[in-house]
Amino acid sequence: MRAAPTILHLDMDAFFAAAEQASKPSLRGKPVIVGGLGPRGVVATASYEARRFGARSAMPMAQARRLCPNGAYLVPRFGFYRSISEQVMELLGRLSPLVEPLSLDEAFVDLEAGGVAWDAQSAREAGQRLREDIRAATGLTGSVGLAGSKMLAKIASEEAKPDGLVLIEPGTERALLAPMTVRTLPGVGPATGEHLRRAGMTTVADLAEAGEDELVRLLGKAHGASLHRMALGLDDRPVVAERDTKSVSVEDTFDVDLHDRVRVMNEVGRLADRCVQRLRASGHSGRTIVLKVRRYDFSTLTRSETLRGPTDDPAVVREAAGRLLDSVDTTGGVRLLGVGVSGLADFTQEDLFAQAAGEREAGEEAAEEESAPAAAPEQAAAADPAERRWVAGHDVCHREFGPGWVQGSGVGRVTVRFETPTATAPGRVRTFRVDDPDLEPSEPLPLVAGPGETETETEAGAGEAGDVEGQVSSSSPASRPKSRSGPGSGSGAAMSRP
Image 1 (tube, rainbow, N blue to C red):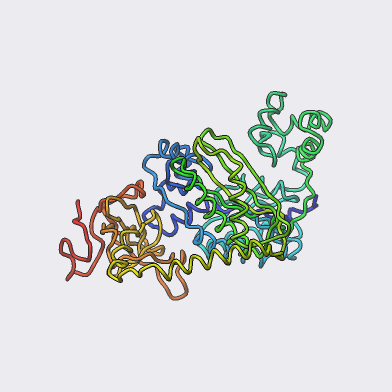
Image 2: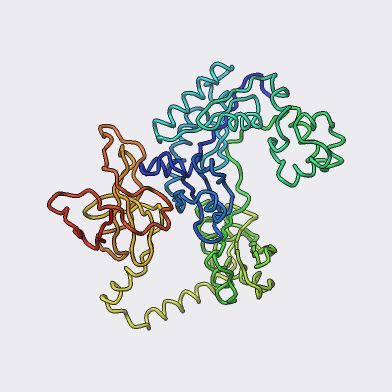
């Protein structure tokens, strides 16, 4: 424990939803829910406007829709969020060499190690400067907690939400924690919280009064002793700049249970390839292949196999995952599949037999491609537009109307709202055919205007931003030159309605 509050915890406010609101003027001040839009989708982030209706992270998307039927429901843009996170982490790196990222939007910083804070006043000033720098660089807000330990700094940032700063003075920890619920402490989830409640402990003060022996009896030696120390406000964990990656994994939940064994095998192979891509991107290889299967009745089975040496060969991981699948009964249906690699290393030890099999497989595929008749150019061009999929919330650009984002698509139509992050008013809406050649996916625009750029005004459309996933009709045409302002102008334009 430190004598000065020089450990900082930053938590961006409703990060995914706030980033979407910042990039889409029509959604500012309105409920926004980001997550999977399928029947089994889960909420990743809900804006504070949506939280007033009861929507929250990790909630089933179907439940969020019932609670907040008029919200804007968007598919996550992780590449976009990652680029913003990199800007924020760069600002944290300027404060100290000891930055411990916990996720894209959360991190601990040791201000003392950076020489920017040594007492309460200097720590508060550093935290305030950080919030101002983040807003200037990204247009977003973050909440800052300052304390003498990591646990208390995180609790302080929670108390500071949204867009605030809370500093816990050393020596006041026990008085601050005493009335808080036991769920405030790290490691106390719903099950542990209920177990403690049945034992008559609902507040942190109850845990401190119960004593270490009683908590060890209830929760076991390691957990009980740790929880008692935290109840007393004691936490001496250091800020660790780099944490070793323990595993890499990917998983998918399917909208409809999979019953076809061949389809299940194909999905496992696809997940194995994605897992290897992440594994290689992190600069690792691994020895243990893990398969996760959640069946129709929500029972979850995990199978693993340890190889003779670490590998990052997709053929090896696919083959191992396939062998693991052979030991799982999937006849009742599969709702979730996952493939992971653990036992990570920074070198590979190739399996020559698997490598030869992979090369043979690649050779067979190449031979099949050479022997297959080439498709006619006009046939390929005709097939491409039909496969175009417009994802709610993702960026597009029209040759005539410029940048915008997808409000929704269906029945052969895609609805786009044309506006930019620097606009001061919502943009207008227009509907096109899904195969409109003038409409293309695009990269996200910067949230903050660069030097010399100014904010632009966008004429507001008649349509309000509601459930953007399901909105396919146009409210009114987008702004355009007067010479092209007649009804139906523009390639693939749908008739606008008042």
